[in-house]
Picture 1 (tube, rainbow, N blue to C red):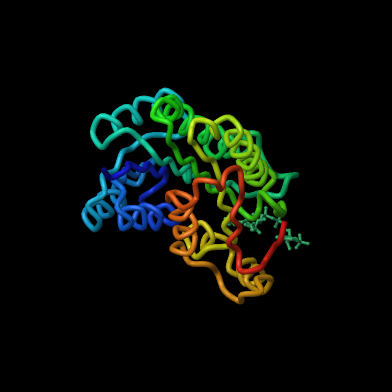
Picture 2: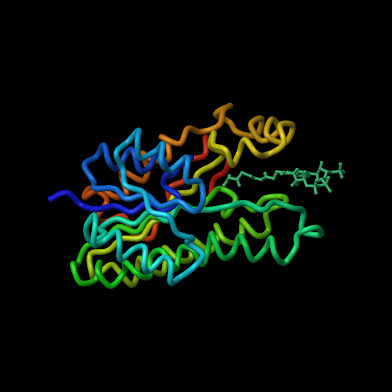
Length: 240
Ligand code: CAA
């Protein structure tokens, strides 16, 4: 029977590529989004993938949304915590609001996404938790104290969940994308982006599909013994 996968932030950018790839691999996919109704409607029209709107920063909304997905699509076997935002500013200019928005969405959002699906995975003795971290959680980044903190936090989450879930047949892993050609990276000032690309030995930005392929592997039966690890896909920009 086809497994069910939930992808947060799954209608645009890297998340869209992940949703499409998992669907192509035979999963029943549900994709969440936070606000862009138009993009979500177009995504469903193009792909046939069901979308659900909730704010991952809100625990009760996440719990209720996940209950709906499980009732309408099926018990969640694979959860991809992908939803994330940036609020970049040099630290001396970063406001508490910019700090909290990013922590609430990118870090607490992972808790809110995984915690409601975890009991079902434990009961069914199968689960794949995949968290989309970032190169900037591994190396830090100018103007991203908030974002880098959340993405480094993701690595602590998967290493801990891996130990808790292993005996119940649940794996938890992270993917650390480098700079990928998405709206998030395109929003960086052009001069800064050019300088970033010049630091990537591959000489180019990554494609969302290149991250989706890493997720597809981690979601597959082949990856059953891969647990608590991090796949870096960054064109040789940074090694751990
Ligand atoms: N390293 C060193 N110095 C840098 C820098 C960097 N990466 N980026 C900017 N600076 C410097 C500028 O040269 C400038 O220096 P001077 O004052 O000497 O000219 C100074 O920092 C900028 O100061 P400002 O007060 O003008 O900064 P600002 O308030 O206008 O903020 C910014 C500008 C938000 C930092 C903007 O430059 C920016 O967005 N930078 C990109 C940050 C970045 O890389 N974000 C990653 C987004 S992609 C992503 O997050 C996805 C992922 O996972 C990889």
